[in-house]
Image (tube, rainbow, N blue to C red; front, top):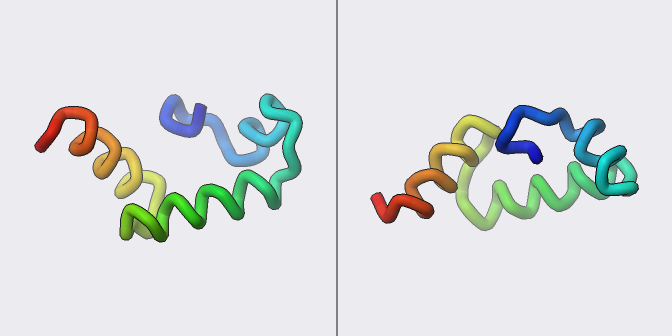
Length: 52
């Protein structure tokens, strides 16, 4: 969802979650992957998927 460009608010609405919940989980994902932005997250995920 976020990978296709949805905002955190759009993701929250689609998943019937609060904005805060989505933001909290996204921050945890950033921390685990050692990234600081959505662009860096997308790059890290792509590298993981392609094995680069």
